[in-house]
Image (cartoon, rainbow, N blue to C red; front, side, top):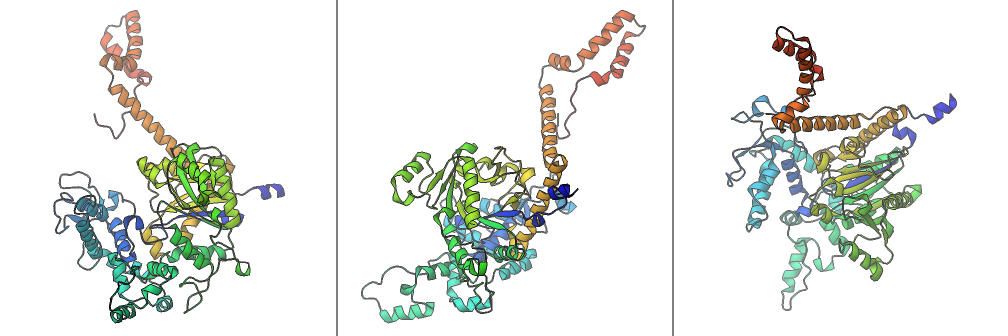
Length: 560
C-alpha cells in the first residue's frame, strides 16, 4: 500500500506534485498592449482597437455603403468577446435578418478595415478615419457607448503608478506625439545660423535637451512617454505570484514581431530592481529576479537565451532553430548556412536542425537560465496561407508528467486558424486542437489580461487542472474525451461522405448497393413458393428484412 501511494498521482494537483511550468508568452496584445506590426505605438489607440475587435454587430447593407457616418454597423452583442460569439447568445430578435437568414456577426474592427482599406492610394486618409472612429467608438454618443466604462477602466489599469510618473516627469505634449506617431526627438544636428536662444527655449519646454538624450533615455521615453505600462501589470504579477508559491518555472517570449529587444531590456530592468514601477522608489514595490538574496535569476544575458525559429515546411523535420541571435537576415535555408559559416556575427550560433535536439536544447537552456526569447518564422507562415502547421512551434512531451508547457497567445483561434502548432517531440504527433486548447495553449483575451490582475494565474490553474485530469485518465486507462470527440466527428464526416457518394451514383448502381441484394432474395422465395399475392408478399418481405438494406443515414445538415 505504501508503494502504491508513492507511485500514484491520482487526486494530486500539478502544484502539489512540484510540476515545472514553462510559460510561453506571445508579445503583442498578450503582455504588451501595443502592436508595432500594425504601427500601433500608442496604448490608448490600441486599447480602442481591442474594444473594437471585441465588439460584435451587424453590417447593413454593406461595409462600403456609408463611408461618412459608419452608421451601417450596429452593436448586437452586449459583452466584449475576443472570439466571435455564437448567435444563440444574442437577443432572439437579433438572431435573424429581415429575410429570415441567420445574422452574420462582424466585429467593428473588421468593418472598419473593409470600409476603409489601407492597401489603396488613399491609405493615409483612411488610416486617419479609422483612428478617429476607434477613439470615438466607446465614448458617449459612440456606436459602443455601452463599453465606455470598460474602456476607461482598461486605460486606468494601464496607468503608471503616480510615483513612477512623477519620477519620469515626461511633458504632456509627448503623449500627443506618441498618439499621432510623430518622432519623439530630433536626431538631426543643428544647422549653422540657427537661433540658439530659440533652440534653448524649445529644449526647456520639452523638459529635456534632446541632444543630451542617451539611448536608454530614448528607450524609456518610447516605452513610458504616454504614461502607460509597456509590459502589462498582470504579466509581472504572474512572476511575483509564482515566486510566492515557490513554483519552479521558466519564461519563453514568442513573437512574429520585432519587439523582443525592447521587451528584453525592460524585463532585465525589472529583474534588477530598476523598473520604474518595481524599483522600491516613490512608493513602488521592490522586485528582483537577479539572484539577489537567492532569488531566481531570470535575466536574459547569454546569447544562447535568444533564438530564431524557421519553419521551411509543415514537416517537423523542416523545423530549425538558430540559437544565439535575434538578427534574422534571411529566411532561406542555404543562406542561413552561409551566414553561419562566413560571418563573424553568427560564428558562435548553434543551428539546430533536428526536432529532438531543438526540444532538448531549449529544455537545457531553460534549466540553466530560466528565460529565453524566440522570434518565430512569420514569413514562412505567411507564405503558407497562415496555416497552423507552419505557425509557432510548441514542442511538448505528453509523457512527461513533471513539466507542463503553457503557451499564451491572443491568436490561438480554433482549429486550423490557431497560431500555435503543438507537436509531441517524442512521437512527432500533431496534437489536435481539442486536446491542446486550455491545456498546453491558452487563447488570451486582451481586455481580461488588462482588467484582471491575476488573469494569467487563473489561466495557469485552468491549464494545470486539465492536465491533471488528463494524467488521471491515462493512469486509469481511460480515453480522452477530446480525442473521443474528434473520433466521433471523423466518423460523422465519413458517414456524410458515404451518403453523399451514394446520391451521386447512377440509379442502377445506387439500387445495387442498397435495395437490390435484399430484393433478389425475396424474389427467389416468391419464385419458389408462388404466393397468391406476390407483390404484397415481396413488399412484406422487404419490410421484415429492412435491417439488411445498407443505406447510410442522411446527415442532418444535408439538403437534397
